[in-house]
Image 1 (tube, rainbow, N blue to C red):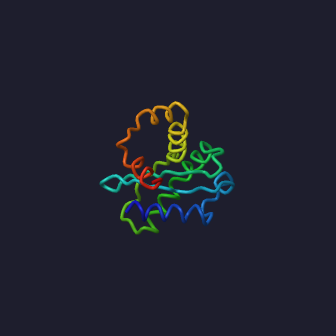
Image 2 (cartoon, one colour; image 1 turned 120 degrees about the vertical axis):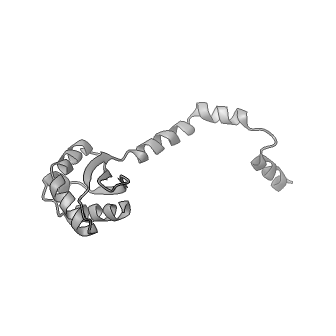
Image 3 (tube, rainbow, N blue to C red; image 1 turned 180 degrees about the vertical axis):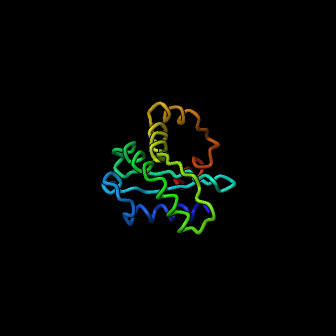
Length: 130
């Protein structure tokens, strides 16, 4: 059900069905939707590409909740329109932060000290050198 809601909200946003200058000025993607077990609540994670004005985009989306709920219920053919909560999806930023951390000199040094001669990758390298 969450994937159907994700497709519906993505379609609403991509077609420009919401008459709002803030929303129209941003390319908004919906990487994930989570539904409550009773399907009464949809948590919609959004990314405003470019990362600018995400708080403004969330506020604009929040001001059109009634329209969005109605459209989702109509497109997904739900008996009840779920309550909607919009959240900023920060998974990509978090993954980038972790990647930077793993590539830092301190972590590289610690990982280098942790390697042992019994490491399978090291033994493969030794065999190919012979």
